[in-house]
Every structure is written in structure tokens, then in C-alpha cells.
Length: 300
Image 1: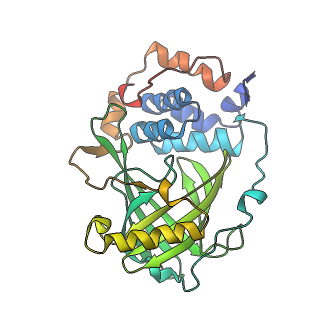
Image 2: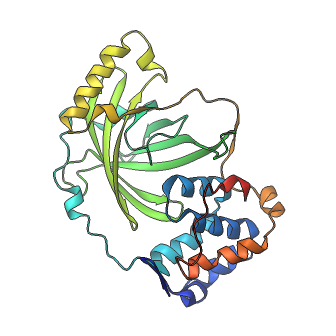
């Protein structure tokens, strides 16, 4: 079936992806996660809020099978990222993986879709094979503005030139059931700060951005912060990125966060409504249901 630019093969859900579909469709919390994502129509923040509200291994497995492994839903367009990775930004000449070891706070973000979530910290630990293990904490604000969901992800960074041929580090893994690849470029470093640009892609397409790590969450407000910001801005310009686009990240971290994902206790309380079943139509025939204005995953 077709609707708009998306295409779906309903039989694929129940044949090629039979086991993850059965596991998810018999779990009310997982099924509500599917309908939540259907309401987002691919909008990044909305989808992240759905995962924060309903995320689970069952949902990850269903998405991995239907969107990536068997392509039950697709645009029918193969992504060509060769041009996207061409002409990488210049990197500092003295980088080594140990430059990122320890705990860093993300204080400035470039791409509002990916970089600017509040209360972000990254703790890098050297692994025996020379790679870096990254333990990531960040919060996803609830649409109502009342509180947030606390998220925790782990990823591995490996020294390498990446797809662009000019990267310092390469990250590959899965997030929310889908495979991603990122090239990281250390475009600036100084006492107490690091500036990173990145380019990445998933099956849904390429993306890019940049961010600034500091060793203190309030480093830019401390004495010497103006000098540090001037050096950061210079590093951004050297990579042909506009430093004025960097947004300050809120690291105040109020005590109003709840853990992301669905616990066993919460999953047992979820109940399906008629609208949830009706909204499944959007997965089997994309474009059938009009997108809801002011959709709020927290109120499902």
C-alpha cells in the first residue's frame, strides 16, 4: 500500500517479522509505543519522546525488523551518503583518544534536533582494545513542560578515519532498534574543553551537528569563560560552522526527572483504547490518518 512518499507491505509485519510483531502486539505498552511513533510522522523530538515514554526491548526488536531488516515500511529510496561525507572539517593535529577520557558536560549544541537536550554528560573510559566506552546521560523534556525523562545510553568509539577519510573517531551501534554510524571530528581542544563536529547516517538518512564538552558544567560562566568561548568560536569557524548557531544547554538538572522507558510495573498498567487500534492503520497504510496537532506522548 502507498500513502504519500512512504510504502508499506502489511503482510511483511506478520510473515517476515512474525515473532517481534507477536511479542509487541500482545504487549499494550509496546503497542502504544508503535502508535505513538506513528503519530510523530518521523519528527525527531516527538519520536525521542515516544521512546522515552514507551521504550523497551520488544519495541526495539519490532522496529529493527520492520524498518531495517525486512523493510516492511520504506521510502523505496536507497540512501547515497558518499557526497555527504566528502570534504570533512579539519581536525586538530594532536588528537589522541585519551583526550576525551573522564567525565565531560555537553554545554553547547549546534543541531537542535540532536544536540541540545538538557542535563547531558558523557563519561569516556579507555577499553582494553584501545577504544573508548561512552556512558551518556541526557534528559528528554516532556511536552507539557512538567518534568523530563532521564535517558542512559552506552556506545563505543573506535579510532579511525571513518567514511569521510578524515575523522578522529567512529561510532557504530543501535539506538531505538535502528543502526547508526557516526564520524567524529575533534575540531578544537584547550584547557578544560573539547569541540566536536560529527556526521552520521541511519537508514532514514544523513545528519550532522556539533557540540562542546567542558569539564565543569558551568565552565563558560566561570572566570576565563569568555576566553574559552572565543577559542571555541574560532574552532567552529575553522570548520566552516557558524558559532552563533551554538545554543546553550541547560545543565541545571532539577529533581523532576523520571526514568525513560517502560518498567514491568508500568507495562502491566497500560491499557489499549480504540484509538490505539485505529492509529495502527498509519503503519499499514501511511498517510491515511491526519497528523494530530500538539500531539503529546506523555498523555497517551
